[in-house]
Length: 197
Ligand SMILES: [Zn+2]
Image (cartoon, rainbow, N blue to C red; front, side):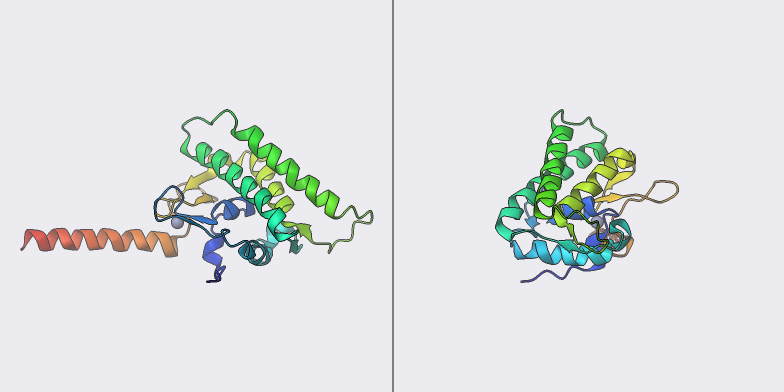
């Protein structure tokens, strides 16, 4: 079934993290990959151009030739997740994580340059989707935003915490915050019911 790319699915706060979050419940047996159907990559890119218009400077995103592009974008996505998840955990970064991400970024930027070597910089030329994700990841590295990247306590997604005191726990309070509250409430009620027989 086609994915409805709702604003909630862009809770990462940066295109690179939204892309990492296209794997749902990563590391959980119930987890799954929304890009398993390659058609979703283009649909995600189309929605991302709207939800991330600020970051993209309003440029639309173009996805190059489906199947060939898929391996590249999946490798880029996994490299993003590996690096920033490790940094969010603050448990030390795997030594190969940064070079792996930089290689994936370089490949995406190379592909974009090859696909569109256009000499006149027309403002409305679409950006290559993978290249836009790569630029987003590079900005997170260069702006040293890593200290602000968190892992949602409910769904495991990565998100950029822009709150003043840096204490956000949920990718999206309205969805994950409420789900946790409901779960706590349910646990309390069942515990009370067990006590009172
Ligand atoms: Zn969440």
